[in-house]
Image (cartoon, rainbow, N blue to C red; front, side):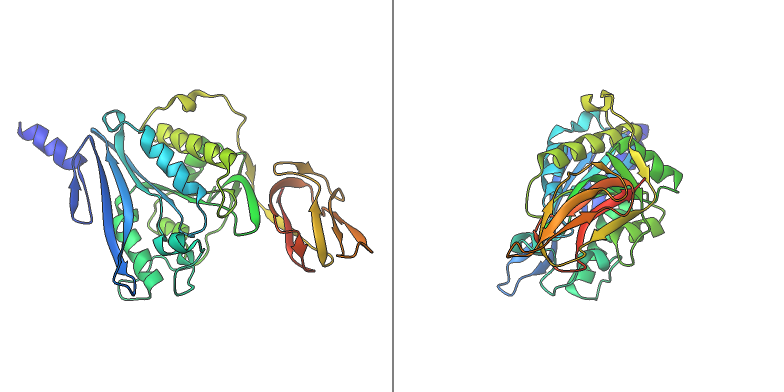
Length: 324
């Protein structure tokens, strides 16, 4: 009996003062701050604790409040995981920036970008306090992480993984995720990825789709990718893990193609297309139709993102190309 109790003690996890025993799904609301109306804003967390010990994986989305694809990805993943078949723990935070999500905004009320405020501070700004809370209650209790994003407003991204592909454990889970492309990317100061990596926690950043819109393809790729990561970590086996897919293309560098002139941009290609150097991928026409300029690729690569708003100024980023 004592051996069973010790085993249960090792498997259970404690978050925000709540102890989640093995084989249990627990929804938590961790207090963050109050609005000027005194309405309490909480961080929504779902913890699925398996019956056996194993990896602890967190899923997070909407660090930028208008990037909502990840909310749906996490909802569908959580609904499909049976805790009695899970080894380890899945910690899901579908909306990190609750303030921005409510306002349909990338930012927090103080106009700070939460993904430039990690690891945060207990006594700092609202963004810094939220970052500190997330690190303390979620990240520091996990062995791996997947943070889900979309392109910024008025842009769209091909499903892609961004990660430190020079780290063997990170590369292993990036290959398991099996996006169309995986890009080696250095961390940015203040990002969640930098804060987690500094603690030796392998983390993937998944990008796909656009802000304030559901993208069925990006959602589907994200769900299947997460389950494949869970399989390679020995956590869970889902039927999608046995699909045969072409391997993800590994990319070391990407480049934005910028507008040579101002006007109305008409994109003539598509996400995932392979383009050659000097290939025409769009045109820019002035509002009166007096002048049309061809937009040509200056590199050979795969289109992984492009602007959605046709109104562009000279120098604006138009098309994001991963170099081959």
